[in-house]
Image 1 (tube, rainbow, N blue to C red):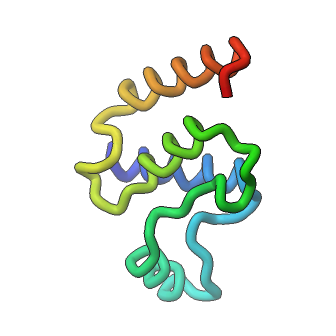
Image 2: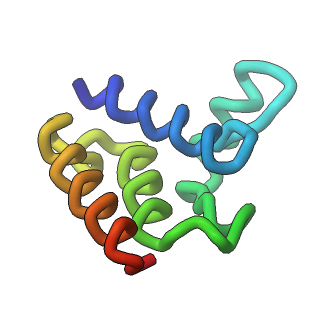
Length: 91
């Protein structure tokens, strides 16, 4: 499940920014970027992204599974809270 949540983070990052969280021309370069760079922030590429969504994405992309959500349900609780805040005009 941790790998699946990481993949969700990568897809979310791409949906928010239009690019992958780690870039390279080969798989090796992408893996090297993942290992040598910190977890990317979508807000660095688009400051209009709400901070809570940025933090959610970064948590999903943590390199160590222990630092990610421990379950999809945990991530969904945060997503629901973020959506509620956004619907109430709190960015």
